Image (cartoon, rainbow, N blue to C red; front, top):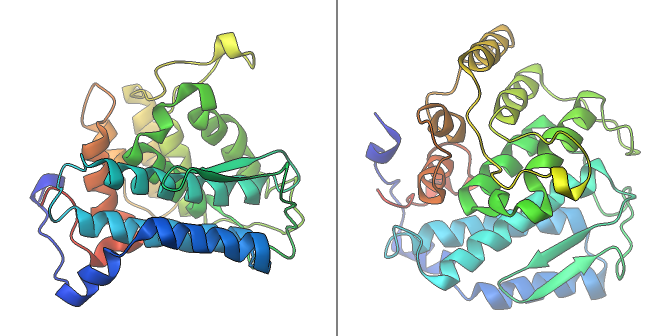
Length: 267
């Protein structure tokens, strides 16, 4: 069964209506939970990201190609939130900014302190990285080359996770299969030959060579995980061009998302 042939998941009308509620208001209330009521920031970002994915998946019933502006804003906000979870977990003491396009608000290190031991209840792992990759590709966020999402994922955060997060206070131990999955996906992110802005690739997704894909498949097999037959990795490997946002969004709903209980788009 191919990605585009996967049937929708059954879901009640009541569940759909709950997921279709006013998410701009919800985002604002979650923003205020952190800003005024000291709710743990990273925990809020994770909860909000998956809640918005439920919302986007529900909207896909009548907007299967995710063309509506509100759908796209919700999807992008989900991606910003889940990327923020990874960013804060890998570099809790660094400078950061997490925008919420749905409400035109943001959190940043200039106005909000992040206390790793207070604002998070656990640590990030390679699985967190894979989830961030999936949603950044599915939403199209990874194509914003000036914000270097792909370079951060490939050349900064992935090596940190292999070293158990040297800049974090919390220890991070990733499952070997998740590390192999992360390494395989890194091959689809265009590397940079240097650290200056002139070195940043404007085409942020690429297709690894046959040898690179074979090495990744062998590493996945050695770690006890089969090479992906669906999902974003399979979407990339089956084509000579970078995957479209809609195609990878379909992959996200069928494999990686907590929104699997909601019908995926395009089914």
